[in-house]
Amino acid sequence: MSKFTYVIKRSGSIVPFNPERIANVIYRAAVSVGGRDKEKATELAQHVIAHMEKQFDEGYKPHVEEIQDIVEKVLIENGHAKVAKEFILYRQQSSQRRQFDSRHFSKPLENIPWGKVWHSLDWAVTHHLHSIDLMNERIKKGDFPQIVHESETVYETQLDTAAELIKERSSELKMVMVSGPSSSGKTTTTYKLEQRLKKAGMRFVPLIVDNYFFDLELHPKDEFGDYDFETPQALDLDLINNHLKRLAEGEEVKIPYYDFKTGKGYPDRTPIQLHENEVLLIDSLYGLYPDFSKDISLVQKFKLYLEPLLQMKNSEGNYLRWTDLRLIRRMLRDSVHRAYKPEQTLLHWHYVRSAEKRNILPYSSTADYIVNTSMAYEVPLYRPKLLTEFAEWEKKYAGDPLREDAYERAVRVKKMLEEVDPIEDDSPVPGDSVLREFIGGSTTNVH
Image (cartoon, rainbow, N blue to C red):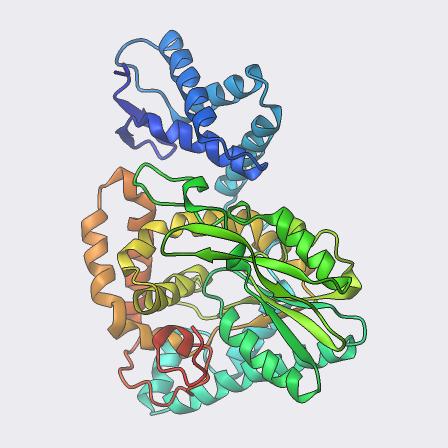
């Protein structure tokens, strides 16, 4: 029995002390540098607790920063310098994000595609769609089908441009990577891009990156038993990079198969090879992550980045958050296609955001082209689907220090949905729209 009962979070909240969290944070840092030894992580966590018991009196409530200081010390003293370095780096980056105050832009954030954002805002202003109030006015006038048409047209135009850029480099390309954060519309966009390029005579070979997942038992878990898939280290990056390099050189490789029902991977299952005039087509969260394709020359790969960069203000003058759009999209998609309840998605979203901030968003500037996949009409469709649930979650998680993230998101999204005029009839939305990937009714059979 540990003599510690409670821990003080950075927010000041007092929560029950859970020794498993220490083992999990050590294992998570180890995974980031290629380690997969859970027993060692548990052993090191016990060392941390022993240090705490020497340092603090009975009944003391340690602050999370004090515990993390001891974790650093234990890792270094036990010869785990690489893991300690990763843990220290993670703490520094997290601290910098917390200190950033969005009211004072002393310098632009590097992970925001400002050029694309400006063009998206200009489009929204031109079409009187840069605030919820203006959108509601247009909806009241019966303009919803026209808003759908305008939004879909600008999206399709972006895909035309991306296809042209790829065609210009077709003689040297070996792979096209469609990347972006969760629920940014990669599946539909990849499909539409492939259709355009097929007409230009290009032939594609798909690579399913999910087959490169490590076995489920090797993934980190939190104190709620939730597995963390939201990290590039959940994938065998060394094997992916090796296969990409060999495929680019014309070799045949046998890709693994991952069984999501059992959480097990099976090596050397499916032979794959690039023949003349064929290009590898990759749809992946981490297509821009450096280690994903570090041995592939820049001329051999085209990197497309997607994100729903909606430029629309609420009644308080604040822009709607792109992450909230993607949260809703993922809730709708996973509830239908992955038997994952919307509430589970809300509770898991802190993993999604943490991984995005470290491993996806910082590399958006390395893309060859960026596509804004937001639709100005999407929020009105979401209100009748999820407003009731968000209102329930706001009440359920109010005052729960272990679910502060879920509560804050529920409050914000509920307010956003309350402000928009609801749209029940989605018939004006084309069957091949990127939104059909989430709201259902797709005629492309992608999800």
